[in-house]
Amino acid sequence: MTTEALSFDELVRANERRLLRLGLMLSGSAHTAEDLVQTVLARAHRKWARIVEVESPEAYLRTMVVNEFLGWRRLLKNREVPLAEPIEQPADEDIGGRQAQRDAAWRLLAQLPRKQRAVLVLRYYEDLADSEIAELLGVAPATVRSNAARALAALRDTLSAEETLR
Figure 1 (cartoon, rainbow, N blue to C red):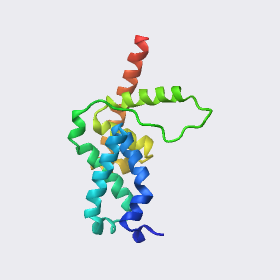
Figure 2: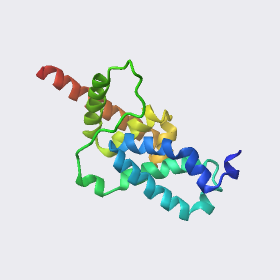
Figure 3: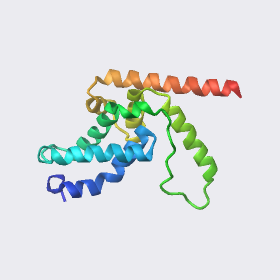
């Protein structure tokens, strides 16, 4: 089945989990990710006649999720980043260690400005090239690179400071 042949419901079923994971990576909260994706899908449903005509409706929805995250004012009210439940856990895995790593990653990402966090999530989680991220965010590729460099430098500084305190 080609993308053009997909109905709105089929596209949602095929991409809902990926959009939710993207929302989770951006917001750090499963509940906020669900709200984010629900808002985007409601908006996309109203625009479906136009969206179905684009080359990649999946990429269009991903762009909508990122833009909605960057523009959401109510996320600014709550700086706390609750942890998500793991999707799957093998029986022989160290659940406590994995949860501690996840908690540390959320705390580090939550300290970054929203655009820097979005750049890192799109680069390392969605595996997009700088040019794709730039197009998605509506900025120049150099801006993407500088945001990524600043974000990574901030993360390194935070980790170095934590190591010094130990």
